[in-house]
Image 1 (cartoon, rainbow, N blue to C red):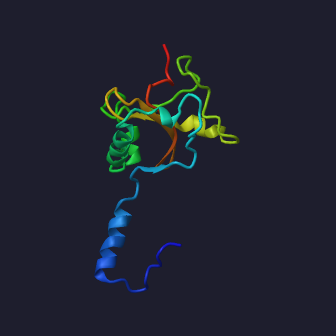
Image 2: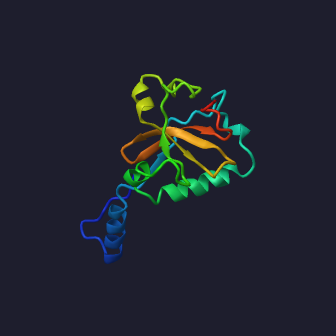
Image 3: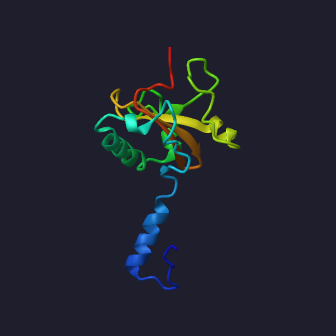
Length: 143
């Protein structure tokens, strides 16, 4: 259970509360729907260094507002953009989460590095990016 806020917080507690409130709108991450047993997007196939790059990217993105991130150009270093599962170049027709087809309409991806570690795929609800797949070999799109 979370900490209860005192009726009369100390000045230090008040500063921490105000600092936390000012973080509203920043990107958050959830692994609630992460698929660690997917045949194509198997996290055990990731190269050494992958997870350090992932943590670096998550830290970097968590300093941004979701609205700002979604409005970046696709050619930015982050390469944060929508996934269109109806695109013929996309190798999947959705995340396959039972009773959650609407998540496919909010599908996004971002890169970890320029080329070496591929992408992370998931969906966005408000300020939270729900990670579904790690795609270190960029297998979602095929030519």
